Amino acid sequence: MGRASLVWTEEMLAALGSDKDAVLAERWGTSAKTVNLKRNSLGIAAFGHVDWTPDMLAALGQESDASLATRWGISKASVVAKRGVLGIAPQDSRRGKHTQHSWQPNEVLLLGTASDADVAAQLGLTVAAVRNARIARGIAAARPDKPPIAQ
Image 1 (tube, helix red, strand yellow):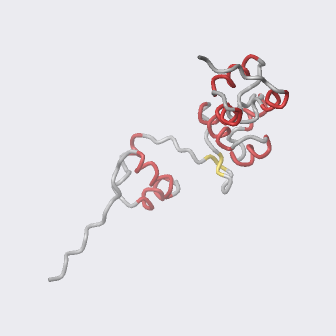
Image 2: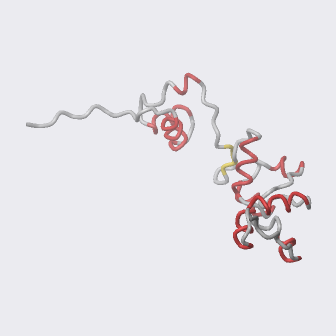
Image 3: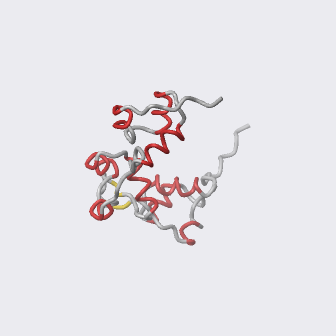
């Protein structure tokens, strides 16, 4: 035999879209699919959904993700995800410039051939940028020749 039909109260309807469907479903003893169908039938956006305006899109990468998220009342993850989908580099709030570097083949060839600090100085990048690029490509760190062991 099937379940009894869920009776939607005004409070339940008002809560749609205020949290994840699965969380609301657990609270009300029903399935996430039931909550999802009801929310969609009423045209209520999913929790965390952002209606991106042209002004919001233009601001991506111009300020730190955290400050934009705070200003707009959304999660930093939403800002990071949208910026990533659009291929917009993040702003480094400490230096006021973009942190993403487009690695050229000749620059990648330098990774692991000298210390990350030396490569960073040569390319005008931060040591962290060089280290992250090297690790992301599975390139081992340069190791200076070990001195011979005294016997």
